[in-house]
Image (tube, rainbow, N blue to C red; front, side):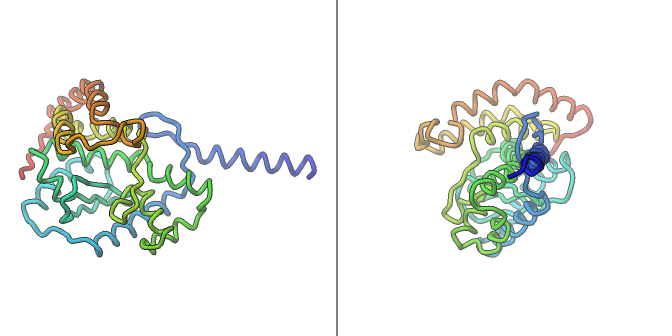
Length: 264
């Protein structure tokens, strides 16, 4: 291969790397080269599949409660968001690229108030804001799966389709658990705490929520270094460290008239 061709290939590679680099809301450099429009499309298709294959709650009070909390948080983000409550006893919620939020009734049975639900929804929206799904898809596309992941979402029961859905962060529904990394989880905690505080919710309830989560797990969580999620103890310590800033944001939000009143 001639020197000119080598220089051309190197230049093309450099352009691709630079184009792929982005900065998350916390200032972290990330590589996310999948087209956002395609990732959003995958989120929309995955959400449509979830609605077809899972029971949707018709409980008026639950839907009103979740909608109230979600609306207050997404108002800080902007855009149009669809919110669905699923009849599922697992302690779970998720947000997908393309503006989709799913909340399980099991989580609603656990939380005591609007602030605790806001912790979870803020966290999940934080994953979307930080483009974590794009990062995961980009990592896989850069290794062995390529652009076929985008088409695979249309066939979620296939092996590749399950992988694609899992990379979006909702793989547990298909028996493929692909949780976000500890880095992504901690980053979503930070973004979510600030987001809920800006919406006027009490960020101090994040500590109580994760204490309840720890009690609900009954000590069944894996050792932290074997898990892609932070341990409950580490998560609580991290939240305590960033809580003062979030409380200042809440005070500012309250002073500006943001005082959500969402009741179960």
